[in-house]
Length: 67
Image (cartoon, rainbow, N blue to C red; front, side):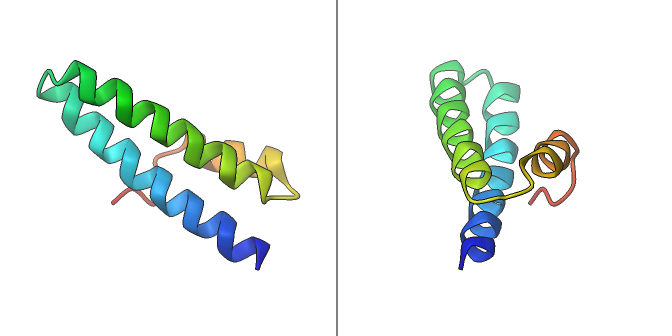
């Protein structure tokens, strides 16, 4: 169950990162800030459910899995 929660949180973060990029590119600064907070919360949720946090942070630093 923890792996599933981590995977869902990572997928959500990935999508939020993509939306953040789109908002920033379109000069939607307030929206970009809001999305960045949501992405941070998703990352924290993923880290909280991963016994190998160091590996997860390395994965999130890469561009893998973006929607």
